[in-house]
Amino acid sequence: MISEIAILLLASILFILTIYPTVWVFIASFKSKETIFSNEHATYTLDNFRELFESGFGIFIYNSFYICLISVFITIFASVTSAYVFSRRKFKYKIVYFGFIMLGQTFPWIILVTPMFILFAKLGFLNSHIGMIFCYVAVSLPFSVYLLVGYLESIPRELDEAALMDGCPPFQIIWKIIFPIMIPGIIVTAAYSFLLMWSEYLFALAFLTKTKFKTMPLELYAFFGEHTTEWGQVMAASALTTIPTLILFLPLQKLISEGLTAGSVKS
Image 1 (cartoon, rainbow, N blue to C red):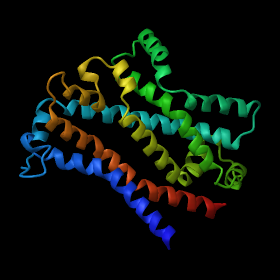
Image 2 (image 1 turned 180 degrees about the horizontal axis):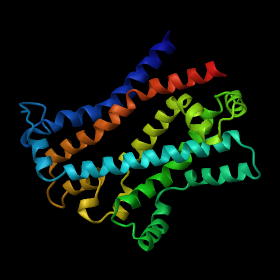
Image 3 (image 1 turned 135 degrees about the horizontal axis):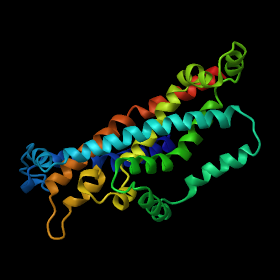
C-alpha cells in the first residue's frame, strides 16, 4: 500500500513537472505584454498572435511543414524498403551493412555539421529546402530502419512465402501485402521522424542564412534581442510550435500499444 502511494506521488510530481511548462506557455501566449509574467490582474488578448503573423512568421511555418513532410515521406519509403531487406532477405555481410547503418545513429550531430556543410556547399544545397530535406532524411533514417526491422520481425514470414508462391513480385509483396500490416509501426516511425525534424535547430542554423528559407525553431531565436526580447511573440510562436507535437504525441502511446498487440496476435 505504501509503495503504491509512493509510486502515485512520484508519478504525480513527474506529470506536473512535464506538463507545467507547456501549460504556462499556452496561457502566457494569450496574455498582454504588460501582464505576461503576472498572475494577478492579467489581461488576455490575441494581439501576440496577430503581431506574430504580421511580422511574416507564416513563411517560417510553411518552410517547417514543407521540409518536414517531404523528409518524412522519403524517410518512410527508404526505411520500409531497407527494413524489409534486412528483415526478410539473406545476403553476405548483412550484419555488417546493418551495423554500418546503425553506426550513423551513434554519432552526435555536432560532428556531422562541418562535413555536411562542405558537401552541401559543393552541391549548391546551402540555403535551400532540398539541402535540409537530404540532411533530415540522413539523420532520421538509421533509427527509422531499426524501428521497422523490429516491427517486421513480429509479422509472420509465411505471408511473404504464400504471396511469392502465388507469383507476386517482391516489390508488390512489400507494398501490397506487408505495408498495410505495418501501418501502426509506420505511423509511430513517421511521428518520431516528424518530431525530430520539427524541433531541429543545429543544422538549420548552419545551413540556412537567408530569411526566406528559415524554419520555425531558427526564426524563434530571432525574437531574443541583445537588449530587448519580444516575449509576447516568443510565447505565441512557442505555442504554435508545440501544437503539431501535441497532436502527434497524444495518440502515439495508443498506436504503440495497438502495434504491439497486433504483432503478438499475428505471431
